[in-house]
Length: 125
Image (cartoon, rainbow, N blue to C red; front, side, top):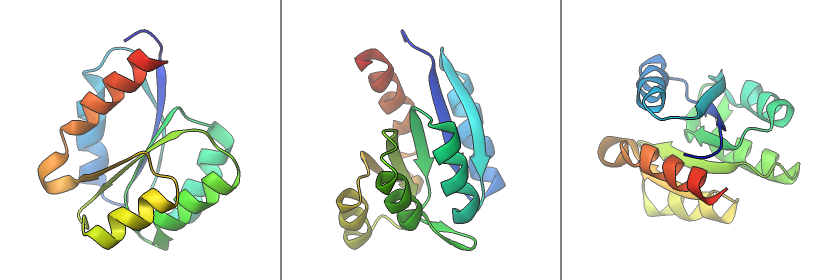
């Protein structure tokens, strides 16, 4: 990787946050700059931090990731957004892309694709 990428993780599961942290710690030049467990925390923190990449779950305590996605896109935050969810049905995939997601992955079978995407993003910048 050529540029340090600042990553923000939004998931209400500590297990998933830990697993993502472990996965991303193996990549050069990736810095996790924050975590959020709910939509209200996430929106404000992402707007403030302006990360390069946001990893976003759809269903969160106190709201949902689609609202977070809509809010940050409404504020013109240019972060790449990777939706990582257990709810990978077509209607969620379609809605996330309509609201500005860059990637959409199923947690149960595509978790490891996160590292590949981040590596590609780093090379592209």
